[in-house]
Length: 448
Image (tube, rainbow, N blue to C red):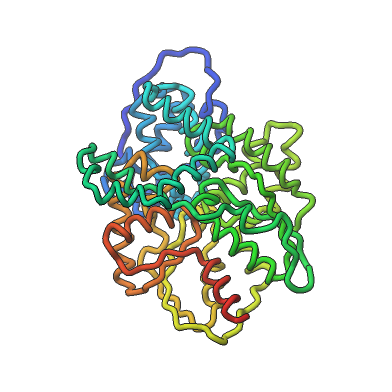
């Protein structure tokens, strides 16, 4: 057993407790960690640096020191919270059941509340993205239209081939290379607000189309609706949806996350559905915890508890109701490997169901991926704010993919898909990145 080294914590003179996220958090959550160290081998940042502060145990020690008034929030504390991926692998390894996901979100909210990271550039970017762009689907779609226009006119290819980008700073070149491909149509153009079950209706479900998912992977939303309809579900897909708030909660904007949670519950009244379906691992992990997010809201707290019970990941729901096996006719031989999105396997504890879905596809061979549940480096916006560590993890993941020799990689999260697609393109690998639900939808279509 690894023994935690002593951490020197400066003593702060006694003063009245201030209101803050870590002070106000249930102290039993803060003190759960036994410092046993079993989480250390599972933490990607600790594995890379071997520094105690870069481990879950070290970070929890810092959080507890702030909760105990032994440490003030500092820039070093805030930087450490943003160096954490939030992959939650430590929660899978922890024998004490430490709720690191809750600690992590409150620690980042503490960092934002203390304003120790504030500078004009950072404040502008956060105001533009978190507080403006992702608070309204129409604004996000407008950005999507502009990027689509830029790509479809060939301006992106022209710019990349011109050599002009080489004159820009390296970081700007990297960011341009990460520009996502915008789908020709958004989800509302691909599916109707209500899609009837293909056969006998047994369930009524709703599908969350997401924000970035709607721009980059609206085809996955279409496939999700189709697969559900083929499995006896009437599917409700409202055209004007909000961001679920996961991006805000994971980046310290607690108030905005609560606002978006209320809007989402109002748009999808949980009492009206047998299940509310998410096909994005990161969103789903957040969506299943609206009850803790809105625990102090007397109006929404009861509805949020029902919401949590109804929220299901697409793989989880199909496994529960029973997947109708696609016809074997015209089924090509496919070899697929599966990357486990962190917030699906560690956050939601869903590991067997995606494999069950893939194995239901005729003539498909599933090859296990080494370190399948090791983070790929996407982690929300981690690849934007911590590019060096994100790229280290991406290269490690791609190395394992090459080992499998599988031409198809399936994963159930848009962030992972986009990040790994960029890596595949950069290394010129003959690999198709795809959501498992798309492979199942394609199998149904071939059968018909």
